[in-house]
Length: 332
Image 1 (tube, one colour):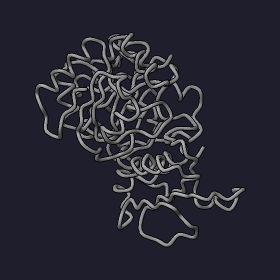
Image 2 (cartoon, one colour):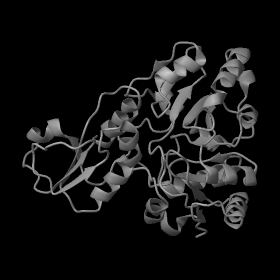
Image 3 (tube, helix red, strand yellow):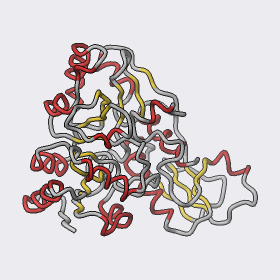
Image 4 (spheres, one colour):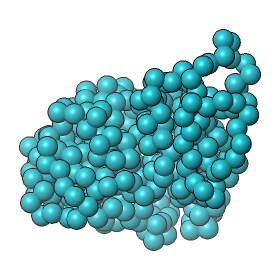
């Protein structure tokens, strides 16, 4: 494994880029979660992502690039309902990159068909992490990268999460420390006249409406078949530990009552039930801290032979919408 520390080491980046060129898989950090990367132009390499993760081939991947010019290169705006309007919208969004925003566009010819999960679009983004950007620049091409974990399990936010889940199945793990955002990117579809948020994230609906100066809609939680081909992260059950997860309001409905309970709370408070383990995500209830630590807490409690994990809730507004989206899918 070609690990690195939090500094950018040229030798490690070079080895990782060479691995991608060979068609191998490379795990790397982003600000959201760790990604499992392959050359997005290499059909066989992309299919290997699905095999290693145990991911359904119909579940599309996000492609990471290093610049806005590459977004224009790897999408085919001529296939849009309004190419000039789409270009203008992408230019308005450019201040949000690098950052946790993926945009769904008509797929360009250079991108492998397997990336799109049977569809004709591609989700593209520019990650905001120095190691990710260094790798993308050194590789000089698009990298398809879903989260670097077994399909449907909790996304990894540290290199150790990747190693414990995928081990020797991949060529390289770049260690960039814990992810600063901790939740997957916002996915915004621009293939229709009205922009549509398919998956909420740290870039919120209000931010997008202000940036685009137009109405932005939010897709319903229960994704349609057509939406499933546009974006990852829309499966009803996702981001799930092996241990059952529920909200506190559902505890009274469980029979028999679980004996060993782990609790994830967003800020200090008294619990109305007995918890064997408690993980506090923020001393002051800051949602940025909750998002950053949520997946790590789920993974940690999942290793403790508990009967149940009980998670807090928050108002589904702003970043809270993304947090609740992940937890609702984890409780399925």
